[in-house]
Length: 431
Image (cartoon, rainbow, N blue to C red; front, top):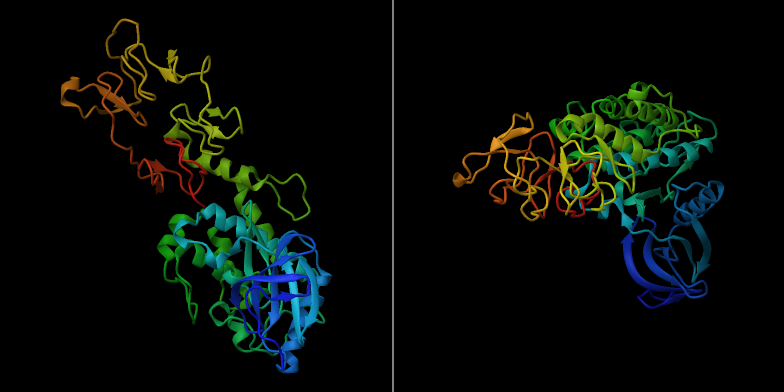
């Protein structure tokens, strides 16, 4: 009779520390490699006396993973048999995509995951493999927003591209329509990945019969860049003949859509392709250049910034200086941001009163509203000021409809789909 599994039990050189999840073919544990001194993910067969096809699925995963090597595919570290059960050891991530708080997911993060899993599928499709079970639970996250595709237990090797295999394996909520009838193909994985992305963006998982428009379409249109929408829409075509036939075709279209403004032809092997972070910064600058007056680059990370920003939204530094480059006639000695001769105080840092003489209020199109302090003689203020430059009153958070988020700390409007830090208070913007 097989020995019971429990926390603290040793399986070879591995010590079971925590149960992470159950699957159709095995239980996954956080385990500790006592020889190499590192944590790993250990998946072990449910029952030693299970049907032979269960053992076949495990062996299939081992053999499939041994054939592919890619930075976005979960690495297999070991495989063996313990007490009649086959177990598989792989690298341990931070958790799966299913564990992530959907309310905090940004479009840029979802697009990055989509891009990386497409790269993983490009690799497995080179080996004529259809994964057939793409879902958030099988996408494992690692530090640096790295995503890796795992659980190839029900993947199938096609003897030739386009050959179908009769099976109903997979997770039904993320099935492609043709999988219901036992005919999975490369396009089936594309459909499942499209469903994962759509759910990340809208919080809604489309259901059978997958007729467009899906529930959540308005949120999808609001959040997803206009050039990317047709790519996602095509990946979710009910009829696989209208869908992307493979991951490489969709990948190229996705990168072309993200980089269309530069008219760059995208290919997988192109080494000089613009990094994903630069896509994000370029798209941000294109959308918000006028609103935020993005005329400068951060001295530390070279990301696009405005003189109004107290913190760099890309790296979080508050050390940017605008001496000699400011768009204002003078610079505050305390925070090194631009000020006008007519102001009594710095509106950005609450610095001491300026020593220069008062001058008349000049015409400036950057003045957009009046100071709310009734004793301020209705002096006008500029957008993004923290304090009135005449009466020093603290101003309410700036809320503008063009920016799609609110900082949880200072409540100012932020570009939540782009920034890593709040430009006004430095708070981390969660992805």
